[in-house]
Amino acid sequence: MNLSYHWRRWADLRPDELYAFLKLRSDIFVVEQNCVFSDMDGIDPQCEHLLGIDADNIVRAYLRIVPPGVQRPHSPSPPAPGPAIGRVVVAVEARGNGTGRRLMQQALSWCGAGYAGQPVSLSGQQHLEAFYASLGFVTHSAPYLEDGIWHVDMQRPGILAS
Image 1 (cartoon, rainbow, N blue to C red):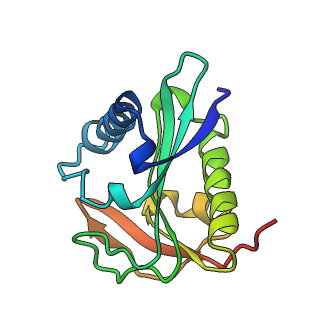
Image 2 (tube, helix red, strand yellow; image 1 turned 30 degrees about the vertical axis):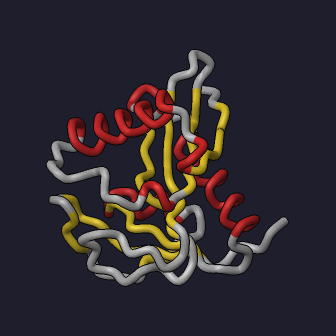
């Protein structure tokens, strides 16, 4: 699936874009993964949002960049010293063709440009640990339950702007 990628600051999001990515997050994290939790955690307004949009203008992939020092509510981990990637999600129909990898590569490029040299963190679902490791992330926590799903904290060394 060929997607175009668009970065948005909170104030620049159109209502249809906001609705689309919140629906995608809900469809995957709450419905597909059968995980009852409050997805809207109050930090979205502080984040940069990456939307992967298909030819029909449908959001099929999404993630957010949490700026350094922002504490995720209910997280057992302290705020990341650099940016953190979160809420990584790919629609069912967009999986298995490299969409997730391209989404993450866009995020890593963004972090390299905006936060050059700072480590990039994420709290990843444990079953995706090998995927994130293939992008240079190293696990630095024991597995822990977050909202009923096993997670691990991972970090990637700082990326220099290109």
